[in-house]
Length: 188
Image (cartoon, rainbow, N blue to C red):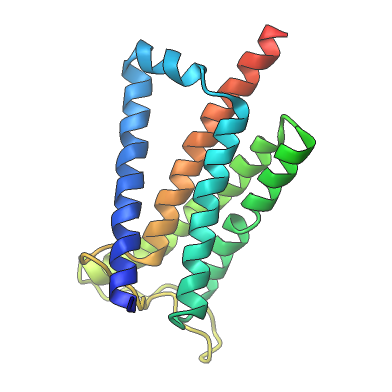
């Protein structure tokens, strides 16, 4: 599989995840039946869902870097700082049966989300809107520029867009996890 095919597959998966997240949120807001069904899902299952998406995002980023040798800019590194440890936090949470670590996951996703949004804003300006836009990234000319992207699929999907969608989905799942945690503590 070459870089373009890999990017297309990931882009389609990210678009499906984004659509599922939006539909899930809307359904949750407007359908009491959906809220009832969601309330039946266990705390552990929500954590496993978060770990699944964070692991896929991590594997996708590492594959881009080490298999396809795409450069990693400073803003991408910052996004990775807030994405990569999520699996470890969730594994520790599942192993120790701690109930509040989902808040740490939510905090990390809430910090990673605006970094991804800012980074994607620069890519959107350059690749979609056609405006020359330079992100202030690094003064080191040997580091990759945050304004350039080796990946632009369907004319608008870049790696920061993918991270933005995954961080959004994780935040939504953290919210549902928190609701389940509150529900279980009220039942005790």
